[in-house]
Image: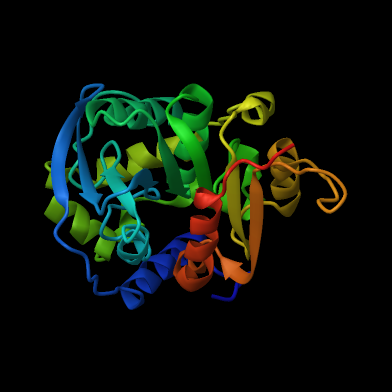
Length: 296
């Protein structure tokens, strides 16, 4: 999707939504194990696909398992060798909202509580956009629960987004989603189908309030992190370099050992089109998750 400097923010977000329709796909999944977990006051909806080492999938803002870009295809591929736990976070999909703020700390704590409920000591965590931020924060707040993190087009502090993106958030409202799949899916899946305008306002609040998990805290996490970005995904390129230095350092890998963390930047790729690069990204993710610690 090529950028248009004259495109209004609401039109931009609408273009994202209609691109989602065009990218709808038919999944070949087996019927998952599904349920609701009582965590931190939520009845959190989750699905379990496949078997093997556990990996948690965290969707983007406003999305559910079924309408996160190509999530079903990701599940099909990952569940061939892993136990994939896809969840719907606070207020999203089948998980009803509750009376507490939307913030990254609560959402990260919910992931850890779900793993406790499922009696899973630790898992790999893959998150896209909002979900990527939650995955990063979970590795900070719950280091014993997170083995490895795959952060897809996400930031650990608000100013990681480009100015264009930050300027667009305050202009977005439920009207921008009128008649879109996100609105119809919400009304179909949500326990409170008439609350869509309030849902949009509530989710937007997480982007309107500054957040910063702390560069020092991210650097200190024991979980290796795979940062995946597009070269035009709305995240500042200098921020991407800064973040990878925290975990990956800046080394000549042929001359001395390097970090277990990784970075991928895909060419000609936006925040939206990034998730469609399945044939490129999923093998990279599998290789990262399967990698054993290198000898130092």
